[in-house]
Image (cartoon, rainbow, N blue to C red; front, side):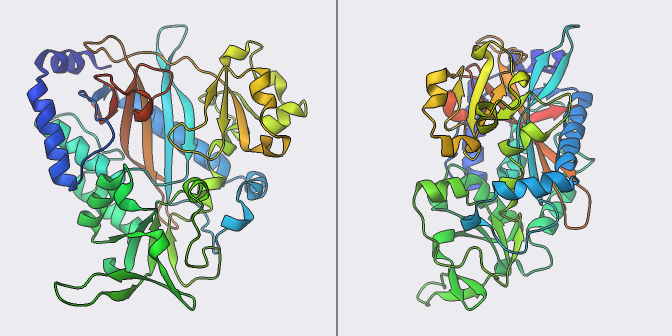
Length: 408
């Protein structure tokens, strides 16, 4: 993107440095990073990333500030997973953009999706510094947004995740965390914030209080530690798929705070896209509305330019390109409100690599402290040459995968 840095990196690339990067990431995260890290970072003009960050914030406010949307999005939160004491706004937001080529040749961001759920805030901060130092990138290049640096970034994350509590009484909850691809991120959050990672199925409830079991020192017994605040990374979609029954009253009146209230996972998601009115947003309609004849004029006549998406799934699960009528009819009528038909956008391949031009999808990571403003803090990119950018969809390729973005 910034030709000076792109050309310099490609010219100086050394596979040995890439291997050093992977080894460094395993040391610094205390985990084997199980998703692919690209051989190259991305270099973007500050103005382009600023445009993305501003657009993402505008989209978030269109939803959160709309009483009508908030009322209608009540239906998006399943009753059996509706958690009490919902916050006034989400504490975390991620907004994904692809890049399209305009008629005049300029590049513009186009929304892929948005989610009020935490991303890999720890892993990505470590990766951004590791790439910069391993490949000896230009010292002028930055990776934190909003004028943040390493110290202020982690201070802000501590404010949102830990709050005013003793870090020992704050936990990151996930389903079988040791088996998750994002384990590297959990370890960074543990190390930087002093919190514990806890399998959500092992949480203990006593009355309205929650506890986790902490192992004692060698030879001593484990003991229960009270939980004051939960940084939740457990995805309901996975709970349902794995038929997990939680050992505590997830939706009850619990004496606990949430750093990232679970209801927002549903309120701001693919469900939100048909409600948005913004130049960056592709046209979309709920499948149930489409069958009812509502919003059909939003989509192009050519069905090869459609995408069918389940509303609540991660990592591209269940997405279908160019769905046929038979594909649509195969979805039971009662389930159609859980699917979205969306205009397919042709993203430009803008990253020059030894394997040809490659697409990059940019994620803006935000935090939203209680009673304060939404803040864009960091970016990540996913590079790919297939139909989808997820690292699971670009296997057995080089110069693709997850990476950092730098700007000047």
